[in-house]
Image (cartoon, rainbow, N blue to C red):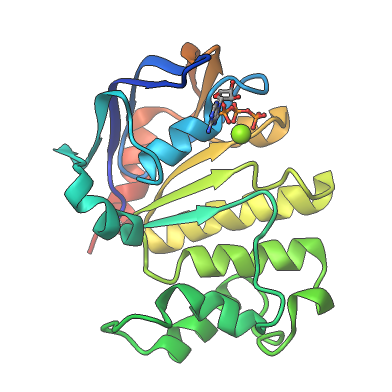
Length: 234
Ligand SMILES: Nc1ncnc2c1ncn2[C@@H]1O[C@H](COP(=O)(O)OP(=O)(O)OP(=O)(O)O)[C@@H](O)[C@H]1O
Ligand SMILES: [Mg+2]
């Protein structure tokens, strides 16, 4: 189920520079927010803090109104999916085993293979389960990475320049796929991108510069986002 996200006065400081400087950002459940801004603006930092891969120096992150604490981080990381620019598939594993990799070392309350196959179908690779990454195109590898990100049925998907290594046509297909999966599984999405066309396909475009939000532009009316969520709830 899609979750809401809030960054409350979040700062991330390194000895030489401030990566994020008192950022406040609220993302409604089911909303897709595109993070834009020049290199070094803080987009990846927002994703890492939201995903619990990094911790703020000041302020905090809330998921469904509950403050993330260091104790929750492991559980939190399991509730989110992450898609990277450079796919990060394990080269020796088949597509199916890459999708299953996050849940192989753990006990889970679902049938791994059934879900892995369902997700490969959902990303259009039902017939390539046994292919190695080297036998797949860049776009197909990113589809496998998207399926892997969904293995725990996350309510939140974070993507860091998911189209950055793909040509614009294939990039468009990946974005369209994410939008379709968002409807099907019910997810909130935060996507960092340098591509203006990709950004325009979100519900909101949040621009960062020097660690601060400099604009926040709504594309989809909030009521439509709510309506989409309403359609998902049983
Ligand atoms: N581990 C680190 N140590 C020191 N500085 C860091 C570290 N990680 C990030 N930074 C700095 O924090 C700032 C924000 O980085 P971030 O990666 O969030 O930018 P970005 O908007 O994602 O850029 P890009 O578009 O190039 O991916 C940059 O100035 C970066 O150099
Ligand atoms: Mg980045």
